[in-house]
Length: 192
Image 1: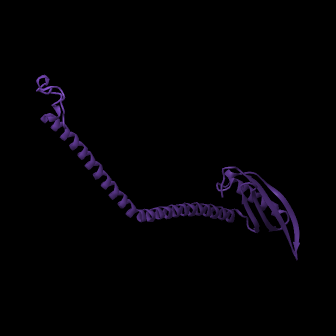
Image 2 (image 1 turned 45 degrees about the horizontal axis):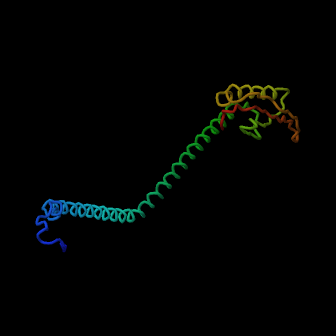
Image 3 (image 1 turned 180 degrees about the horizontal axis):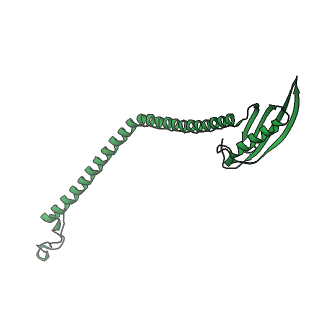
């Protein structure tokens, strides 16, 4: 820096103040060096972080196809689990139906056969069947079957209001037949 002093020489100050000379002291050089060094260190730290971020982004892009495969596998496994649970529910229902049909086969009196069987949670149970007319014995068979149906553990707890809905006598060539319909209501918690 160029300093022009226009004051006459005999009136001039020969010494500069310490504040004016501060920029020439070693302390100023140390402070300046520390500031520049801190800025460089911060800049290096930012550059290292940017490099790490770029490398992680590249790794993440490289893993993206694998992630898609894993997501597809997870969806497939979830679908399989849902199908398995559906099959289990279906198997339990089939077992319940098989049990009920076996009970019906055990309860049916000799000489009586079924023509239709409906188990509908909203409408109830409907059993249609036929028997040969044998001097009034056929009605006793139907009544015994109905009572056994109400008492059996597979049907009884879920059935209410079981009754003979209709009885119809008919002739098939030389054989007299009695066609019957038994109905009942189902409690709401019973399932097939």
